[in-house]
Length: 414
Image (cartoon, rainbow, N blue to C red; front, side):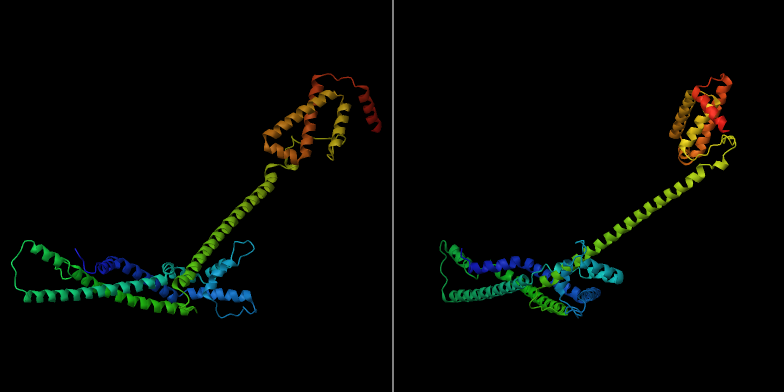
């Protein structure tokens, strides 16, 4: 079976099948660029951010040839990340974000106002324009093919009618019906061929869609050109993906810098809180350390009378040093006629008791560290009690020659 101009028909059929998808894609791209252009042109807070950047740049450049500028290229915004501080982490953009947040907090809304640039920068203007041209060409080819088919069908119908009028009817022969059917099936005037009807409906709808899309594309071009000229750029040399890409990169970097500043403030606030807590704990410990001796260690004058032994003038001991106290104790022991070994044993026992008390009681440890006089008097009192107990229970022991000599020397001195 022959199909009249089947190659052209196939191309027209492909156009019919792929047209809805192509139309949706191009329409979405046109809407994205239109929305992004409108967002960039009508943003109320983004100019405030640009003013802050310009002021900081003029301050940094000073009175040089770069200072005192009235404006800057929009692409310079993304160079703020290149200027870093000594820590190699903080950038000039961090300072800009901090300045905007401190002085113009409402200007941070520009991040929400410029969100449409994310979809606008993904559109390739060259591909979109090429797709529009391809759709126009395919639509024109389908129209031409439909017109040729209509003309061919009319021509064949006229020829068939002329042949029918000039030729007498012939008797029907075997197989003549199939031959005439094959001839009609192979011609453009085949009544079963619905290509003409289908393409006619499609072309009416596709033509309306393309006209509307073409109008949107023209409006998009105008809106984009207006937004680019607003920022001092040339729309003929800067494509939408490049122009909107600058805004997308800047908004993303600015948002990250703002979050970094917030985290840094929280970290400093937590560190300051910890520092104050540590200082408070240190102060509380210092106050407790200062007040503990006054509250827990009694003064010598406040001790009961039975704790402080009465000492005569001849037996008074001035605690000026450990050595003087030890010599006086030895002289008194020798003069009293006590056994030196027994006295030393008593002293060792008392020392062990004191060491045991220091281990068990923090109060006794404090007394031992801060009141040597009280301990010395207590030890003398214990020694005296032991001597009295020995004198009462045992007869006096004979003095050794060294003891007799020391007693004689003491009496001679008196």
